[in-house]
Amino acid sequence: MSLLSRISLGPDRWLARRLSMAIGNAPLRILLWDGSHFCPEGVRPLATVLIKDRPTLLKLLLEPELGFGDGYTAGRIEVEGDLLEMLCAVFRATARPLSSRWVPALLTRWMDRRQANSLRGSRKNIHHHYDIGNDFYRLWLDSRLVYTCAYFEDDTASLEDAQIAKMNHVCRKLQLKPGDKVVEAGCGWGSLALHMAKEYGATVRAFNISHEQVVYARRQAGQEGLSSQVEFVEDDYRNITGRFDAFVSVGMLEHVGLDHYKDMGVVIHRCLSDRGRGFLHFIGRNRPQRLSAWTRKRIFPGACPPTLRQAMDCFEDWDFSILDIENLRLHYALTLRHWLERFEKSRERITTSFGPEFVRAWRLYLTGAIASFHTGVMQLFQVTFARGMDNNIPMTRAHLYGAAAEERESRCMPVMS
Image (cartoon, rainbow, N blue to C red; front, side, top):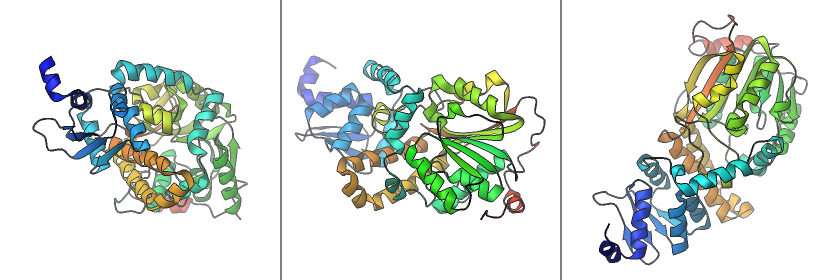
């Protein structure tokens, strides 16, 4: 663009044009504080993004993801229209990862060092997100506090039913049977560990470094009469010892850190019996790419969803065979829609406890996550594996579908009293 054209646009409107180019000329109208605006030619805008001051506009240009997240959270950016549609439009229009620009790249390297998943760093990262308070999560998760992707056998199923279906899906993949010894790395509030014990007769040792979650899980085990079957250990997965028939981790690998996947592999190799089965469930990517700077800074420090190739660092050195890979991307988009709907219904209570900026931040996080899975920016992988020389593995997938649900009932153990 010539200097004369820039002058005719005006400096702020010209900056708005540069911002539009930075987000792939997404079909959005950028409205500035003085009433001037910019919209790519020949498009019908899906929404209007109101930027209330020049410093916010400049931050958007330097680091669009962090600038938008912080601006929206603080109320310096407003979206007129559907926030989900707006985010989906940006994700579809962005031609290349924004982290390839020099400012985001420098910020990413700084965060990698500051949020490293060492023994101490992991505890700090997990505390930031998971120890906000159980009362907060009770407002919008299901009754069992399952904070991972549900499995919708029917897209009209309730969130509660879909989370139970997910836990059964995991247990069928592991082919759990009464008496199996299971170790779980990263157990959340304990719902899966309790389900494996109660419904499949397994003995479970579950590890977690979130103090609030472990306290809650131990209380639940006592109330359900499962304390003799399930042990909740407040410790890092790297300190797991013993031998087990099954290793399971749901929603933790994305918090391990790429540099520690071989550490995870060492733990799995050390604790899995010769005929043991393993299962990893994690948010992933189709190509290597970090989480947005805003998500890492404000919501999930230290998190990094891996590609399948990157996740193989957990398996290859120890000759583990991959038996099954499933992608539940659209299931997670639907799960998040349920969470967001419940979150919005509890908005007033959350505002009273945490303030309006917190509400806007979490609305953006949940809506952005829906958009990520809906547009294919994020994936949800389930990987089942066993030792390479183990021939005691299923020949088909018959144990996962069809009559498997009915067959499960014959394997169930009575509730322990």
